[in-house]
Length: 580
Image (tube, rainbow, N blue to C red; front, side, top):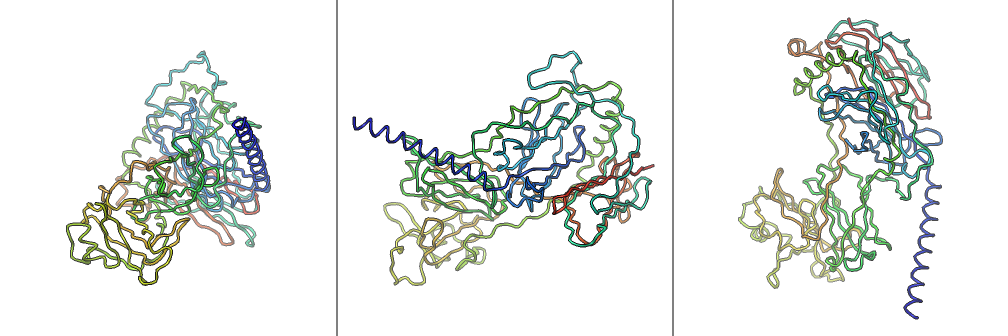
């Protein structure tokens, strides 16, 4: 009877907690503003061998001003089988980010979806994500579809790519107080295009814009393209927290024996490198843990370790981001009209030539700010090349690292850090130091005492009692190896090792300069259909002058300027030029 009462009590307790948790989640959803998303691309029809350039704005759903909520956004490309062809993680700055994707020859001709969302958006039942329709044509893989082919459940109708006569549209050179002008309307090949973007009123303007210059296609999709809207009232039972301070890495700690949730367990995160990230936190009453990663990191490898003395009794279940709405996506089967064959062949040859010379036309990766050690400046730093080198790590600590020592007990080695006030004994005096090896938490120094010290660059020490997270350490020993060192000691078998999706890096896209480098470039073919992509234009009171150069490709090019104003208004300008 007593056992039954206990079971009933636990059951009621779980129901009460579930109701409280639901109430807290509803309050959170109602208290924090919803987000919306805008997504621009340089085109909607691509050949394999081309690049999809895109830019996204995350907006406050109510007033359409830039959202300051989420710091991370996600972009995915999905095929008709709902397979993810790429997922990009974007660091948002004032709600804005951009990147690109090179389309490999392995991607088949078809209708694809470019999805954009934040984790916080996934909680919206009416619009949890944005979808943009993309058509990719692969000249290397035959398109075998006939018009009478049976359509599958997720293929609702057909989409025909057909010829399109190019008629130069009207220019739209002014919108919401911003103008777009060029010197001329016609240009010769390999000549400079000067572009001016200007605010009519020079006060209190803050516009974030992207500009694209691309040759107009002589093909177009049938009228039923790009009319699929994001379905409303989507069902998802999972609650996603907003990534307010940066990327969230989360999971649950459970007991290995009965799978019960483990509260108040200390867990350490390491993203190891010469500029590592290290954090430790404590799980909540439900065994959940959340790491916020604000800094950039240079390697995808991450390590989670339980660092309490009873760590062997528990395991880590890591959360993963699985997009919950793939089943709501509908696709069309792409049919290529035979009359567009010449267009495909011509453009494909241009792409092949461009890609053959791609090593001479590389983009520049913008450097990122490497994270600094969480402890600031060390008490003392030992750069080992400044000292006589010793054959063993033990000798190195004895002869070089005066601020720390090695003690051996029961055939096990441990490190100690000498404090400045050795005679001032307190409750933390016997605590172990925090030992890090390229940011990896080292539980047992015996595991690395045999490491070759010639691969070690420096050893930093923090002397004195150090409080970090829930732990108190008697100093810190921070060991860094030389760059490109591969034989780094491993963590124990209880660690959880996984790869993070690396954030997309910012780029400066290649632009030839025929004014300054004509002789150097005159023998290099230039078959660019995309003359310019610049996603990071910030317009204030002063005009912005841009320049780029035409290529060897002739025809009508569209200059498109799109973006958002700080007050929530949108801007979309178009101007058409012809290369003769």
